[in-house]
Amino acid sequence: MDEIKLSYPPELLRKWKLGLLHRDWYRRHRDTFCERDLSNAEGQCHNGYHFGEWYTVRHFRQQGYQVLPPKYLHSTRPVARRKATEILGKAGVRFLERMRKLGGSKLRNPPRPDLLVFRSNPKTFFFVEVKRDKDKLSTAQRQFFPLIEIQFGCEVRIVYLKPRSARRN
Image (cartoon, rainbow, N blue to C red; front, side, top):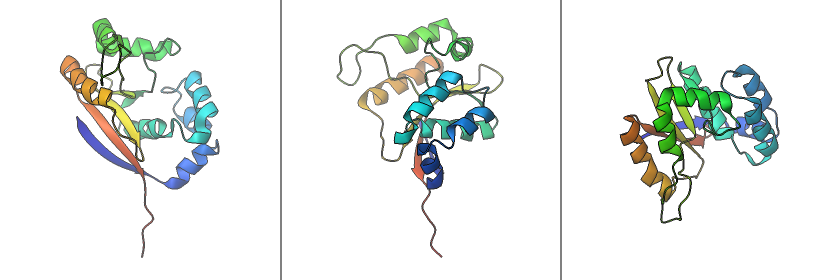
């Protein structure tokens, strides 16, 4: 697993929590986010939820990638699910959805990475898990992500997103 460190201006998180960013980012990236993504962001932005994932989507889009946002395999995201199935294949989707025992837990859905990032060639892709501030990989994620890398022959990149510190002169 490759680790990427990104920083965000703290002002952006403040604006996100006030509900001032997600509509703008949704309008700019309609080919990435659906109305359900926007609805989730609107309902949960006050706690900072989804900020890290949306910020990271924008980071990879600026690098020329296409991105499927969180819940790309959920039935409420049919367009994203179709694209993920095109990229991963039906067997790949079944692999990601199969119930497993991970992290010493009971049988449950595996912890899929937050984002599926790809180029226009669907065979060039990788997964991204976003951890903001002090968040860390769970035991189940540490167990499952290497299995994803083996299954798909691609990386699961872990983005550690931290607030940009103020510089002193």
